[in-house]
Length: 337
Image 1: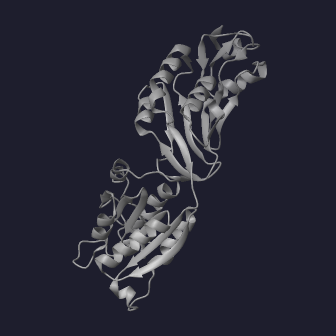
Image 2: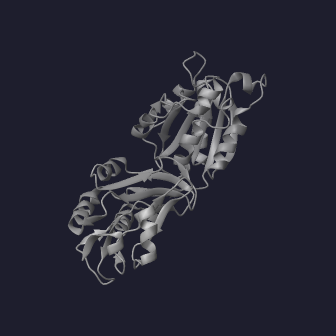
């Protein structure tokens, strides 16, 4: 039987829940669930502000409700998809970790459904982030100390249609063809400084740049280079000529080759004038030469994880980038920070 007792009356009883202690230098469990409370524990409990505690009469006590530790682990395992492991953490929380390096995927609407219950709270890293093996990517918490078994069962049934909610797609060593556009680069008037940036980003996310072609600002030449690379490689990145200047032909070239243009003009700074398209099921990414200036972090850090995980980039995700899309990298680059 579960009861609330004064600390001094709980001696000899079994502690039903972890008792927490918070100080300037420590936050965690003072006493663990399942401990048989001793007289020496009473003073420690009171100093920590716990004059009353939840106890069971004995270790064999059974309750109809699920304890927080059982509930959060059960929900965590239900939400977890590929390459996600679930374990019990401190203070009655379930910890979700990635088992691989890859792209974090979240079913946002399903996550919102859980967090709207007022009973469970699931906190994750942001969708589209790159995570490494062993990274904590989510935490499942329970607001009350217990939850009826029927409540959790009904919630799991309700969530069935949107599983998995949290998963990680591993990166693949895709072969990428890179097209550098610009007559001034083609004629050797200026050095190609875009391809080293692209190559480093592709390598960072597990791919390899198989070939680089430099072409002038000529619609036919750009289209020919993209088309050939689509035949030979897994993805194509095109740089330069992405604005609306008369000589900027890259967006038109991509659009004429593609089966679908997902979006041109992505709500993120830097590199708003970027394009995502698909042809023959393969991604074509158009990025401006501003990646040279923003070489440390740019739009490729947002898009390439999806490409290397072989996950299709949809418009809904690109539109969502507007919230939080004003990055520190852009502000620092403009001297606004």
